[in-house]
Length: 554
Image 1 (cartoon, rainbow, N blue to C red):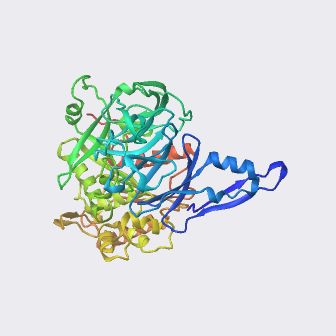
Image 2: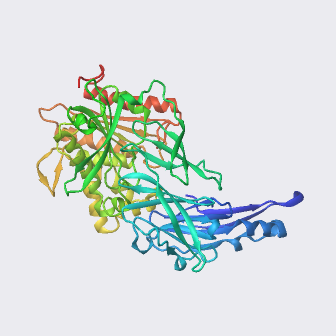
């Protein structure tokens, strides 16, 4: 992990440079990083764990003056200033609003779980001096993620209603109170029902009156747009070319499935229009009027969001009549920080698995899905493994688990494994009995059993390995996050249980393990090899579902 910050002061006229250690982070939970304010006047250094942050800053103007006066002999460490000391559970992000001589923060302090916008004077950045802006108060329906300061305005990125959002804020400084407030706020609107929009990293001009965003949906390829900061109007600059692709042949929509506890789980759907599709009529009604084989994808961990963006690799599935569905299950942050921290982490982790199963049940019960293939990677592989054990037999027809994190208990009990200590803030520390027992209740390897239970136990179906769908597991020999022996151990466990108990009069399920001897955690780095690997996964699914000969009749 990055844990030290060094600076090199170059010597003038051939003098030797000076290397200085500015900061060292000894807590293994924290990673260190640096970034420059958009004004270019301040360098920030942040230490962050999964639940806590601490930021320091250096005034670059002052540093430049010191270097000019003292050369390599300058003591840079003395210029490193604490913004606000770490406090367990408090996260904050910061940028510099030069026109107001203020620092702008997004923070979950004061119990504001979805993050609130606040500010402080540059020379008094401690949390005791932070204040919220009266005209843009905390709203729990808005999950704020990023604040990007320009010369005359501020862009906020976040989430609202399950989608990514952008707001443009024009700030003003009250001369009497010397506090910053929002003079005007506007949300940027887009036409499609489900989409992803992000602030572009290519916004390098600090005094620009417009800014770039990257927009896409499940039918719209990545598009660079310019947004006018005064009107909020967006203009298309460039759309990624996808050879042979015609967006008008496909449709996207949003569905909601009711989980067993009554929570509504959003799903994003893309499918190819059939010959009977009528433009202008209700898309949802037309989609649900016919059964389609369905590819259901999920992740649901670390607060990571699986947004409805474009993926050209899905087109071979869609062109064969499949629907592609992303389940925005708890454990991600699609519906806010609470969707992750309160509903899909630690002792509520099983909501993640049950949500995914309930989404599949919804697709089957509404006669939307004729057959269902499921996929998840890494922690999403844990999702697949846990769901295979917890879902009723026959719900899934095929499953793909990529580099799956399935030996949760063993990994979390061994702090010598890289990342384990950091991961305790995600799954819990099994040295505490409550976390030990809970992790063991869902860890896929620890819950492989021979036969399915006909009745529900603890409100959860128990599926035996003999009733598993066809399963493909992929692993990488050089994976530093999920070591190759973990999926291999899972496969060996399933084969052992199956050999011990047999499958009765049923055919044994297809259980395949594919280990790439050159890849790491993120599959092949070469894009052509990546496409080859992806085609292998899809070929497996299409073969199992009986779609290798072309499109099914809808």
